[in-house]
Image (cartoon, rainbow, N blue to C red; front, side):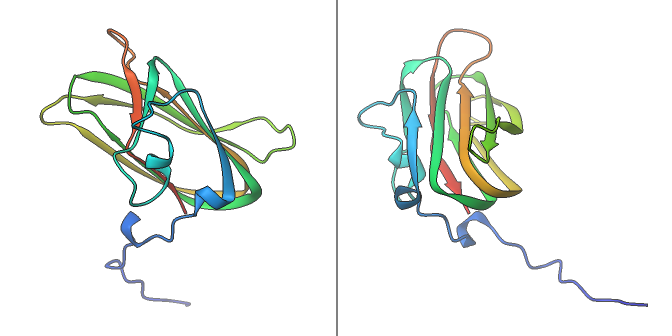
Length: 156
């Protein structure tokens, strides 16, 4: 019998990751942004306070890599401290060259300030030769219009 002992105590956290330097590896398309909350504030570690759309409603952030990347972790952080709302986002990817986008995840989350104000999601993925990665955010599924935002959008 072949056997090996694994250490369940070893876990990596998003803080331990070597994040991709997106500013040198990709172009970004964004449907809108507020001047004081540009997309770079969500994509570059250490920048803050994150990205916020200039217009209400559904928004898209699309990363187009200069060279296809092998992605293993997608880290997302959303914050909402002002109002209760049900948000939905979708992550999709493509290998480029006219290939269709494939959905990675579609997730809904209810923010209920003051207690439930932050959503943190870490997706372990195996995306080889990812040429484009798209994040679509519908900031409110029920109720009045809201502005989409994201505090952190990191890739490793």
